[in-house]
Image (tube, rainbow, N blue to C red):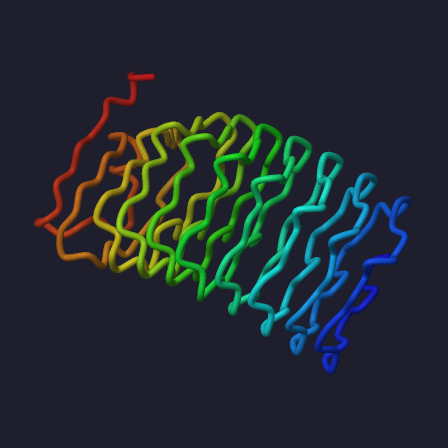
Length: 249
């Protein structure tokens, strides 16, 4: 059922209460491009067999609220671009989401302009390999708790928080760097960001990299020596830098 309502640009509401989806495995771009859609009834949606939800609500630019409490995501492997450009969404409850099998979360919440807070503390990310641009341009997001994230399989986090204009601090000290290969622009264009802890990133023999333009006039950065010595952009003199030995675990 991929692309089922794709680009139904005049559709304003959908009631899928009597929709039988019990055998559906693919919901790729299911509602993507429905940019006039303001209301969806998914209260009876059966998603127990679904493996792909990537791009499911992509470009639903008029949608302010989605109730996903009926969703069973225990078999879902792809959630990349799932809510990309849902820039009118003001709240999103994902507390019921089971993400244990998800491998790709790239651009999942990309361009959530209106969302001030997002609780994803229930996410199990032990199999996720990609988080590039996951929170890109979430410009109203003030805080984000990722202390529960398991990053054992994570390889790509480039532009993960780029454009998060209102974010004031980010603590990634609980992250584990075993496979990370791309961190370019991870904090770029975050003018309010004054506390950054990236002490988990080893960055051994991976070359020069830009992680941020460090727009804030002052701040506190916790970073490993090896990564700091490879930064293309470094913070202003008004920043406090705590460098961690590369020998520390």
